[in-house]
Length: 92
Image 1 (cartoon, helix red, strand yellow):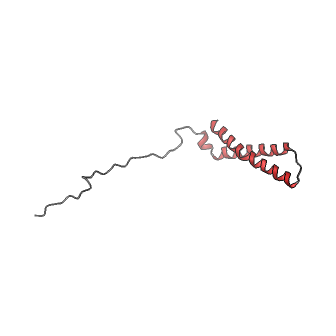
Image 2 (cartoon, helix red, strand yellow):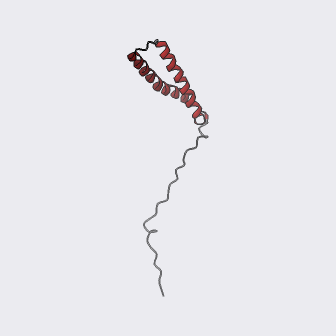
Image 3 (cartoon, rainbow, N blue to C red):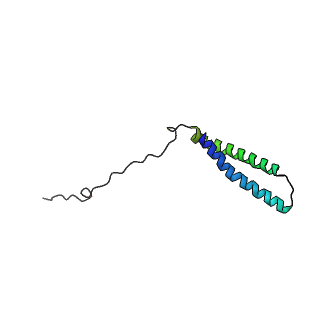
């Protein structure tokens, strides 16, 4: 639930400034609509965005820690200086 709450907060940070800009732009243009209308639009947009992002990331959010595949880092053995030199054969 922590991940869903983080998505809810991030969508609030996206939706309400956009709604505020819309309200300011409409007031400058002379459109008279109550603030409750703008808050309801912002809330519906926030819930919709949260729902969509939760559905898109559902496998990552609701899966256990073992189910999330992470890339395995494998160390590459370093070549030593002696193995990089050429071995010369005696020609008889």
